[in-house]
Length: 47
View 1 (cartoon, rainbow, N blue to C red):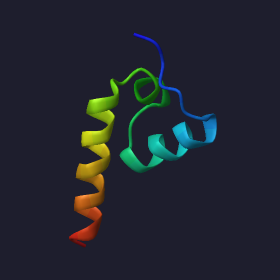
View 2: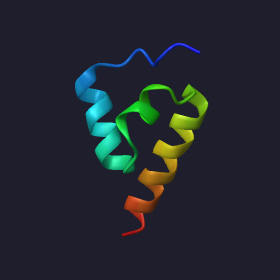
View 3: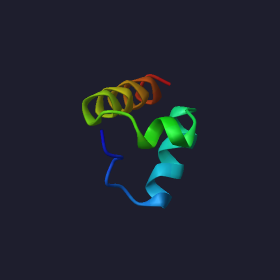
């Protein structure tokens, strides 16, 4: 599987917001990443 096609800055922001290592973000399948982003946004909206 090839790494995600995102900029390094975006990868760093995702890593910080999802509290995951950068390497894990870069090699995460797109559907899984989208699901985690949706979960993080839903959690932030409930605060």
